[in-house]
Length: 337
Image (cartoon, rainbow, N blue to C red):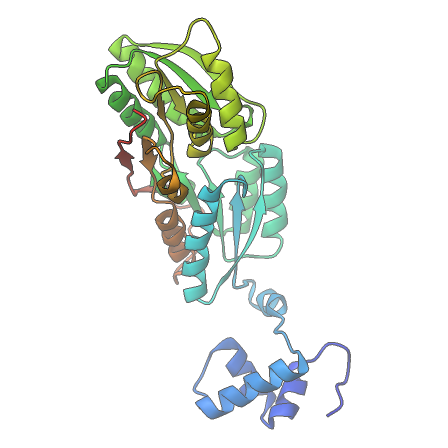
């Protein structure tokens, strides 16, 4: 068979499979009854000649595509790998596909990414957190797409939010550490404080200490991305000061694990010499020789429910009143506190 151009078409698949172009269209779009024998023949023909369906062209005709835009703050932390897995699993089951971008916690990058992703006419968009610029909100309103915000419920969602109270997580950690008898604390964060969810946890933590009459000696915010090495460096710096805390609260488990590594390498006892607590409850913590006190978050479930919401049939909900789904969290009391 002679291919009429460099890019195989639906007509080429039909000719190769010995069926009509309409049959090929039905197989590719999953619509109408087609026998398994014919379906297999069409797919085999498409694979043999390298045909790939132009879903964008289909979307332009219908003003919709099977794409869902996903905007994440970073892929440098495995937290968002779990979230993306949940989103992808839900969308795949519904015949949709995610297309995503990373902001590195920059509002300007979020504005740019949202406008760019919306130009592909996705059927919905996933945003991280509840705080977005007027530019982003205006672009979403103009596009009229469904919006699912993830990770946070402390605020008013654009449409639907799937997450947990970050403020409550900070409060729960502070309450647990206070119950162990600690009164003098330090905080360690990263990304120059641009992680707004970490800021809300710190707010809940700080408020609880203040109400209990305890002291937050220092708030240490690194300009660098979160990592174990950064956590180790920050812990060494905090513990080298004359006014040493009794406990350190880290914005996430990566930094807290670095703190554990510093203590193990320098014969610093946990929690006798210093108590440590993190956030997220990441799976790799099970491999550590010391159990970290942390807050386990429903990362996969947040992504899954957001994906299910965006892929379900129904009208666009861009202008609906915001509603938040609280998926909760679980405080894990480890050996470090």
